[in-house]
Length: 274
Image 1 (cartoon, rainbow, N blue to C red):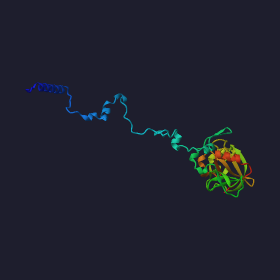
Image 2 (tube, rainbow, N blue to C red):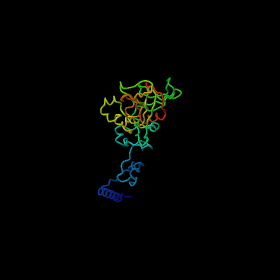
Image 3 (tube, one colour):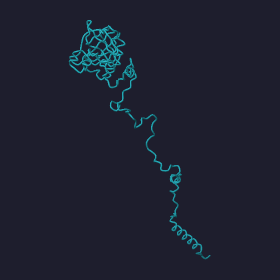
Image 4 (cartoon, helix red, strand yellow):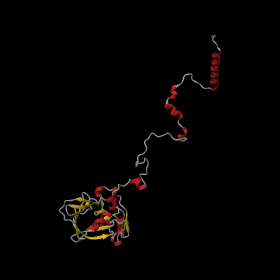
């Protein structure tokens, strides 16, 4: 049977036609099957729907999600100018109750910022061994404490401010008089040292009771052998003086503390100033 070139020419023409079509369309049709395109991962990447991604969405964060109750990075630590200056107070329910606002006989004593006071000078129950009888007041001028002696080797301890060197009194006496919101009359020798106090002298009637009165909310008057020593246990509007030696000889207490002591101490109570 003679060989025919007709089928060969037909197939060759078809090949030229396909090649020309590919060149015109810009496509490259591989003559060998690309098995890498059958990779399922590639298939998923190329066919995943685009509508699952929000338009212009931020890329996902690699940071872990915030834990419940976590402290935020930014918060307002200092809610007022006072706190910016002095810091936040340490919250203590007992001290907050002791040194909070007191409304007393028409006066409103402000709260004391107890967190700014050495904790040693805040009112507290302590062990205290002494030969003094329960109910006695003992003032330790070296440590700047006032003890109100309790039974069983205990005492209530208060911080106090005391007189500068040369202006303090020591000895034994009694609390012969008590006064709420006392008037203050500086002694003549104090007026002589500080003439600006003359307007508060006894002849002028003394300083009126109130929040700015140097004796504060209460005063316990110390007598010895029936005579006024002119020294007092009293409150003060200057809470920062407690624990220091700044007064003219008297025993200063925080107003809230002197009110507490005043209510415990009857007239005739013995006092020892060491």
